[in-house]
Length: 400
Image 1 (cartoon, rainbow, N blue to C red):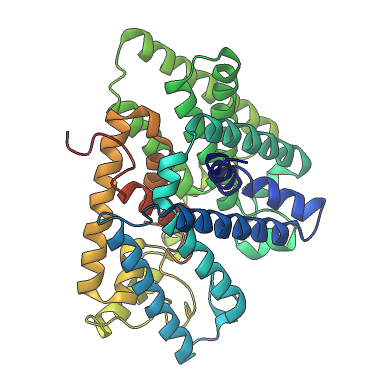
Image 2 (image 1 turned 135 degrees about the horizontal axis):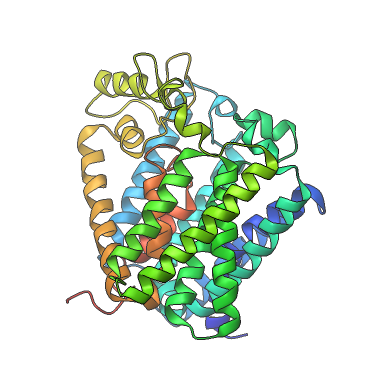
C-alpha cells in the first residue's frame, strides 16, 4: 500500500465514516466505535512513522501558531481539570475520565501534526465521493429506521439519549458535510451519475436538516451555501433559473413532508423571543453568566466551563465567550485574529481554487456553528481543517 493511499484512507475514515459508525454502533454492532477510533490511531501512528522515515516537513511557520495555541489551550484546560473545581463527569462535552481525555487529546494533536501531509496527498475526488455516498446512505437509512417526527417533539439531549436516537446536531453536521462534498463534485466533476447523486444528496440533506428542527444548523448551512453561491459569482440567467428551480423543488418537498408528518419546521424560530434563544440571552442566561465570569477574571481567564449555577459545567455556546473564559481577553484576542486570518484565507480558496474548497466549507460551517452552539474542545471539524488551511502548502495561490 502506498503512502498516498494510506493518507487518503485515513481522511476518508475521519470525514466519511463517522455517522455510519455511530449508526452501526447504536443499532447493529455495539462497540464498533471503539474499533473505529483505534483504527484511526493506528493509521495516524503509521503515517507519522513514515513521515519521520522520509524526513518530510511536519510543521511550517504558517500552521505552527495554530498548533501552539491549541497546545496552550489544552494546557489551560488541563490546569482547570487538575484544580477539580468541577468533576470531569459533571461537565458538558468533556471526557468522563483522564484516560479517555488524554487519548482524544493525543489523537487530535497527532492529526494536526499531519496537516501538511494531508495537504500533500489528499485526493479530493475520492474523499468527496466517499463523504457523499456514505453519509447519504446512512442518513437516509437512519431517517427510515426511526420515527423522524420525534425530532420535532424532543429538544434536550437527554430526550434523544433516552429514546436511543442520534443527536440532531450530529445529524445536521454530517448532512452539511454531505452538502459540501456535493458542492465540490458539482463544481469539479463531469460524471453524470455523481452529478445526479449530488443534487439528490443536497435536497435530502437540506430536508433532513429542517426536520431536525435546530435553528443554528438551518441558519449556518444556509449562510455557507449562499456565501459559496455569491463568492463564485454564478449569476448567469441559466444558473439563476436553475437555482430557483432547486428552491422550488426543495420547498415543495419540505411542504409535502411537513404536511405528511404534521410538524412545523419553523416552530423554533417563532420561539426565539419566548425561550430566550434556548436560554442563551437575557439577564439570567448562558451568555450573561459567561460574560460575568470573564469580567471576574479578564486577564488570565477562569475556566473553560461556566462555574456558576444553574449553568455550572456547561460551555457558553459561543466561540468568543468560550475562549475568553478560558484564555482571558488578551490571549483570546490573539487567537481570534489567527482564526479570522485563516477564515479569510478560506474564503479566498472558495473563490479562487474550487479544487480545494471542501475543507474551507467545513471550517466556515464549524466556525459559524460555534457562534450559538458547540464547543472548541476536541472539535475535530474545527481544529483539523484550521491547521490544514493554515499550512503554506494547502493551495497554490498564496501570493496572488
